[in-house]
Length: 312
Image 1: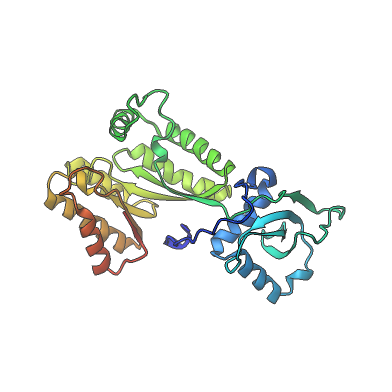
Image 2 (image 1 turned 90 degrees about the horizontal axis):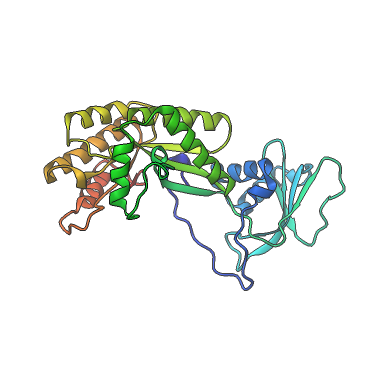
């Protein structure tokens, strides 16, 4: 769960006796289903806990505007998947109640939309915790022939020299719409601080998608080429971390020396602590066995009591 500034450990359910078809209902349910699933995730509650809370407020007597029938769901204490009808308020997006799938749905009631899930699995929306929206969809102009990370990074280094804010916004918006169409409504993207036009475009896009209720977007200020490698990189990094971003990044194994790598991490943690931001580090992405900067990340996390706010 990316909401609230923390990742939550997810317990995956055991396989049911009858294989479930892992489809997402968003494409069929469209906006009402998106709203109910976003609501569920934003509150960090299970279907059962929401139903219990609704019962305390006697919402079982409130009229549903939207019902998903024959939905295969997983509840916290269940031994296997269960078929339920999910009753939703079209106004608030709240789950009002869960009823057994064999209970008749109000298909003929005026103003009530009913969608039959057909026994397929209905889940909270997905989260994409790591993405580079400023560099998405550049493959047409900058083909990655080897299909490797090294060539991908090299291509972006060339592409970003001529990138514009409008171009970043266009490509990023398209990628986000694709993700939402497939059920992903919570996204964390890294923004290369060495590309100011890209950073500004993504910060602006973050506010736009929030207003449009398209998805939840978090931004990491990411120094793709290192922080202390050049004076310009350091200035760009410090500038970007003053914008409306959610997490501070670093890439210590690309710094020039081990000492500068450690210093870059200290800088990132100091800025994050001062701003109340999170930490998201690209760490030790190398075959060098002596690259052990993750130990420094752990030390700084403990020393600054930032457990739950750091990922690497």
